Length: 315
Image (cartoon, rainbow, N blue to C red; front, side, top):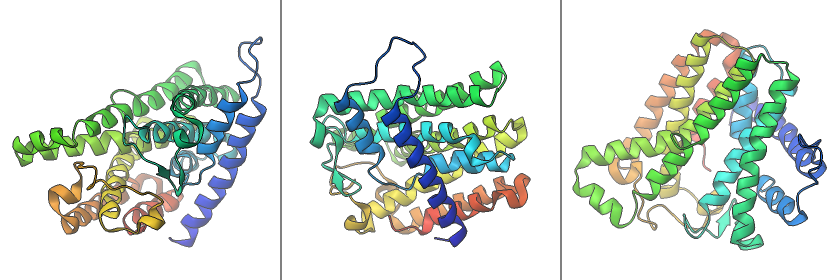
């Protein structure tokens, strides 16, 4: 990883983790005054998954997109935390027995293995809704006009919702096991379309929403938002393709997981195209991502580094 990117991710990670702990442990002031703090088990379950490690990629993207628009990290910290909350909720639910049925996440027992399925589901629900509370609070602290604050919420909801990440997860579930074999019988074109849909929506949508959230908070114009959106689409898709390749050829100990997409009979880029062609596709997307950042000049240096790291990482 380039030193500049490593410093940026490390700084973002420290800021975000400290703020996440403060939000969960202190609770803040309730918008509805008579509401008491959440039950201790719920807070422990939320904090367990939030603090389980990870690259903090999505909050770092909020911070870097805002920096491209001239806004410092401390001004967008709660929105950055909101994107990590949404990402974490998705992982908690993704690991459930009714979904991917995973026992390990980042080398640790998954949330439902520690707290039970009911608490894990509720922790995910709580993180998703708390994310919108945090993002709206960030908009209020920056005194964004009402239409801009509403746009921030809309962008986050679109990236994480039924036409974004959740829709991608549903399509992913529908492209494994017997469903995958039926899809394969429909021909390579149909399988390719479904695979692109899954990756763009399951992964790239939330990455793009993180970038757009930073841009909205930084009051970016339409053309700059479009540039960051295209960067997010390319990097998000390249990230998921690289993830598929790592799942096939990577070190499971470094990845911190026990299962594999191949064992779970899932549709992936290596399965459809092979490992070499998948890597070529990811590299092509990274080149497009670099091109999208041209309007930002030197301010986008970290985003350039991140695009390159997506295809060179080993976990």
